[in-house]
Amino acid sequence: MRHLVFAALALVSLTPALGAAQPFAEPPDHPGPAVASSRPYDSYDQPYDRPYDRPYDDYYQPRSTVRIHTGPVLRISEASPDGGLFAAVDVGQKAAGLRVSGAWVRVGGERGLSQYGGELWLDFNHTGPLHPILGAGAAAARVQLDDGAGGTESHTIGVGTLRGTLQYALPIRDTDARASIDLIGAVPAIRGSDSPNTKAYLLALATVGVGF
Image 1 (cartoon, one colour):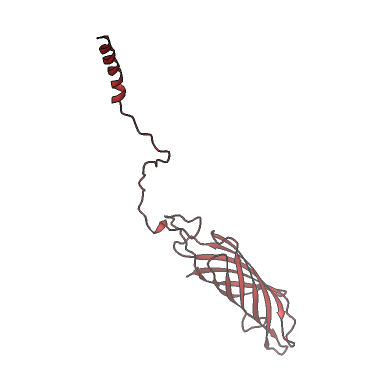
Image 2 (cartoon, one colour; image 1 turned 30 degrees about the vertical axis):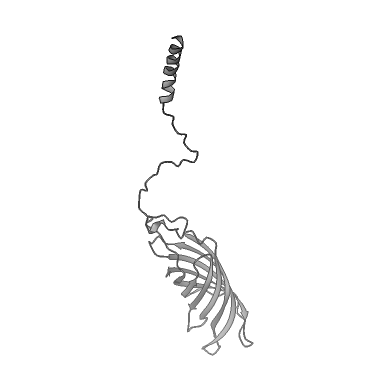
């Protein structure tokens, strides 16, 4: 009888432990709860052309491969300054490219200048709104000088050019528009035997450019 009582007590003491549910251990790499996106996927999820662009930036500006610039130019030399017109085409989307340009100052008159050149350029901040640019190249300059008989005569010389530019990307949405200030130094390098001695000169210009 005593053995039956001990057996019953032992069975009762084991019953709660057997009936309790044992929880499973959570794996160490258990992912967190999923979080729904606040907006659906759209074209703005693609990488941006510039680090400062944002998906809903009102002034998003794409980068263009070809840009056309034009504006007034001032020739500074040993004589009094003269004004004229400047135009250029830039080819290049990133930090390096090619420029073809032309400048016309007092064309048809004494000390007139027609200059056509090409150069290679480097943009030291092509991802930002402010673009410091350095360019170097060569140009053919046609200068008009007094012939001593009341008329003018033209001479063509070759010049080496060095350009320093500061461009600012204008805040116009979906347009690569830029305002620029340029200084171009021209040093005579090639001239004919009958061409007069021509000294170096400086072209100062301000332009507006639009990309395509």
